[in-house]
Image (cartoon, rainbow, N blue to C red; front, side, top):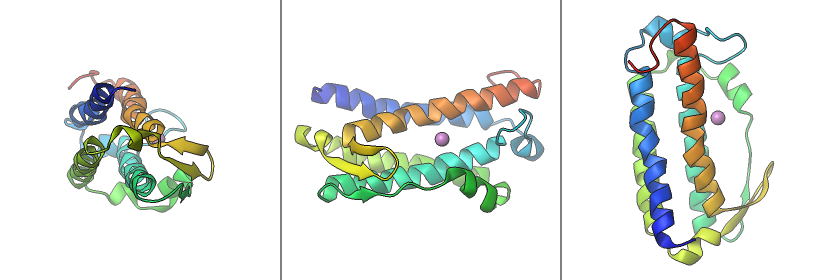
Length: 162
Ligand code: NI
């Protein structure tokens, strides 16, 4: 893939951040913690999941850049959501952390030479994965959960865009 496409993909990695912020900006503390779609996480749980997942993936991407084919350990995100006090979280702190992690990671990724994108790690659940595939998974992660947040907004009778 040409470097310009990598640059576009890094732009996409950052572009979903303001969309996420907009989708949660007008929610009350009660609406953030509501689970209006049966069996699905609350909006605050989704945001906390995005932050904890980002921490894991940023660390994994750094390991793939710095180490030779490192073993990347998966974790149980459902158990995280059940066991960690996500409903005690501060929304602004979570969003700021997510944004800062992505901006930091974007700077690291923009400095990658072409050969860096085909570096690999071995994920304990997904198997062999390249840096390019890792970034693509992260590009898709916020839009995937954003659709779920919009579904919750609809279920609470709120407009799709505040
Ligand atoms: Ni997820």
